[in-house]
Length: 328
Image 1: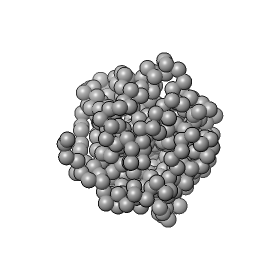
Image 2: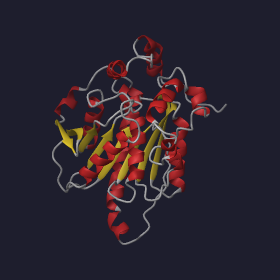
Image 3: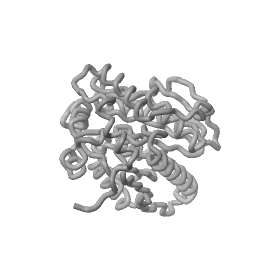
Image 4: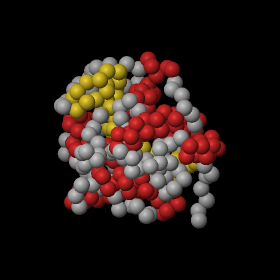
């Protein structure tokens, strides 16, 4: 077996303590699971940076979808990010992700629109994606400079799926997928086999989430959900990060490789020593904070590159750049 970095020391302490704090019974009623997920995120995070309270926010509805808008109204000189939360398309919400989205807005100095999309089991695929696409289209119609879409885990799947759904629109300049769910057929691959228990996200949990999200057999072949079969023509510049101790590690890496082969501008940032969900461990785990800062900075750089290339693209010049970057 190839050598890999040991689990970060602070994170190892958290993992040892996790069974006493994190919800594990997936057979609970869904509202109990959602309440448990809110408590899980709060425990993982530990504290909230007081400076984030200075980020303005307001709740509103865009095209029938509830959102939370962070930062000022858009002008033509502003960048904006549409953020799609994780949680297996089942748990997670605007409140439990509020500190994470505030941190993204604060780090990049731009507006962020967090989407309160419909969740399973009440609303299987494609309800969540339809909500996300509607919000992205609405935001794209507003004055802005650059538009990015970002998400973590199942939200990463939605972010990438929205890029597929909107590939003909050309409105998305950049995408960020934090340890995304990519392939419903990946269960049982090598990263599931070695990381499927003991590292927060489990094989059992992903199986549970997939069963409720995929309502029909045809859904599992839809390229907006199953990104392993997606046509990557017209895909925007993308940042992908994965965690070494994550069952989703291999599918994130493989998707980044496919993007590079398709001549898409892609930055891949694998994170040694970390697990799935490290976004929620900030500021409690310093290594997670450093990793997330690097990922957000990569998104900012990718968005700048993409916006700067627009005039060349308008004249038909080649703009594709393939970039695979390993974290140091």
